[in-house]
Length: 596
Image (cartoon, rainbow, N blue to C red):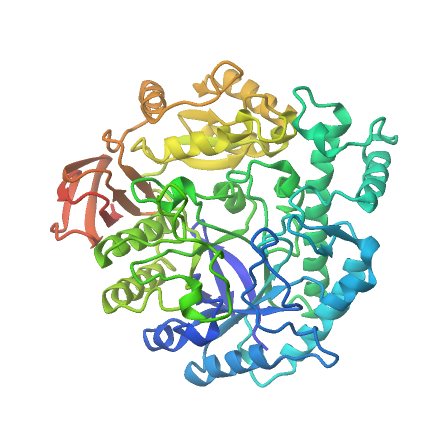
């Protein structure tokens, strides 16, 4: 049996398997029959996420979509066939494969029917398990134990290197009703939580309309915190149970904590701080942000405060579901299985949706390179999520994906801690979401500011406000995201004043700042600007990337001379310089390695 852990070397996290460090670069797909596992294996990929679900009920309770044709526990006798066949095929093609079962912990139909009091009503009808349900924890653990026991006794057991636990809406641990598991049982749990946390039952039992009121009742604010903290506790509970089942031999990861992207506190994702130090969770995951409908020209940033994860010795394993010119509607990948309304490629106003990829292979390469540049400068892991299959079935794309894996492999023993690093800290305040009515413009400040920062030409690090005391000394300026900060946010702001660190913070009069305003503030604070033309620039961990918003000459000014080695997107010769000049098309991406 493989033994794995997340190990930090030279300040960067890696997956260590039987004592050997591996770059966290993987591949997965929802549609096994359309996927390209064999092609990725042929080109040297060894790490794979393989999907399996308790149920074939929808993973998305808004659209009703599910990728799972069968659920393991939907029949009287558990059906492991789909997972077994794919895992065995991967191992037959790649004997030293590292497989991560990606387990969807959602209860089958018969359980939902037998436990209506333990469920919530979804947006489009039908019931699903509540995040507060003790029966879900009990019976979900029993099903998880059956699945894990089967996998660990299988012919491919020696290739299992880690696990990922998924649940809730879109498998990302959001409440199935996207409204805090609003139910009679939920209110009873809320009363118990208030007694435990606050010493007394709530004076007011919230109603749905209360969350949109101009002034939030204190008990409504408490419910915001409750629905996130209880979800986080459920996530940690299942991680703890899984760690026991595998005798702590392998790493476990979860989707959770989208504090820099999801603005609705009733989704339940705003208690990352409660479980960031959980010893049973080794990595956290999210997709790249879907900012600006995944159009080119902007940074697709991190949903989580990635630098807080590293500070707390966790790996950020990012789901890179990057659409390409080969991306087509799922209906074409599985003819006759999905109705036309699933994931339309155009909005009513004829604009493209996030489900469209770039129109050309060249722009697809740029999208992949941009994502790669972002993740490698943050020392994050990534998996290419080929959702419907065939998205990367192009020799030009595959050549880049192979080179990206190689570059990741070269970081294993490379010390880059003293290379140019961000001088700006961006602080996310997850508890501040409880200060705003649901849907209020203040709740969108974090996303708006993060997106604007992404085009300043000034790299930045992103933390939870609770970590400010440990990290502020490293930065020349700080940007805060909450117009109405939490207590931790107020303390962080006060610390900045004490340390004479310039701060920009939204307030009731101005809750957003433009890219130009942020750049002017940061430059005025003495922060180095790499490029002032509203391009996206990444620089950290010994790598540099630029993604352009226009065609023409681009100048990147480094804070000190470095050996600059082009990796992707340019034929510029290797040189030692503090000023890079190159000509690029619009929406192109160039990536460089930096050395002393």
